[in-house]
Length: 290
Image (cartoon, rainbow, N blue to C red):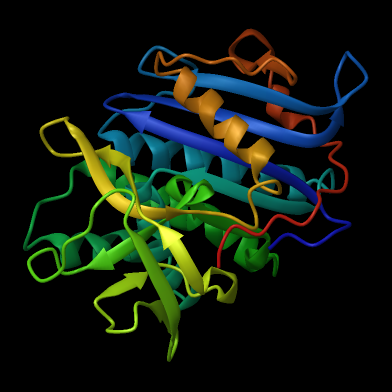
């Protein structure tokens, strides 16, 4: 959660092979229309000033590391002090959580990357770009750790802007879209009475009855949509409205329809270091984890 009174920036980042996009949401900067809420966006590929190369997770990590380094530079210069929220696709978000844990244990970037690469080596061999992206992200996090501000950086799974996944044994339990389930507190989990279905968050506000929805959660290895059962976020919907708009805008840079028109949008590719502007004001409390 981001506390009142802190400067803040929300960076929504997504990637695909050798291509990534980023939106920075500056919630309290005034745009040319006098209203608060400014977006700056950039597209990254092999031909841009900051190049990206690799799979979807790798390019997202590369841009995430760049973003943290930009704000660490501003922090070191005394030009900025605040919080950074990174909104990432599931794979990249999970990877950043693993990186964070190893950074907290005292490892440097190279050691973090080596340990993570070794752990997954039984399943696949990470590319050099993948290993380097992990190392770069770890080193960027370490800059905030050294400044005793590691807690001011948070990473979030973009899926959780709108939904919470349901975890269950697909061979033992059947689910259907529109089915009603009731979740109760079970030790540290929220689950059905028999424990067969567990919600991925344990926030008390989700105890009770919910309708199951079937929604896309990324893509499978063959490029086809990956569909999962989940429940919709409820009590925080209004709080997350603008962040959802930012994520929708990110997806629009992959060619999807986009009808957001109430926020000023600046193309970083056409300007000199737009992201260096740091006159960020107070951000209302934003809680994205249960």
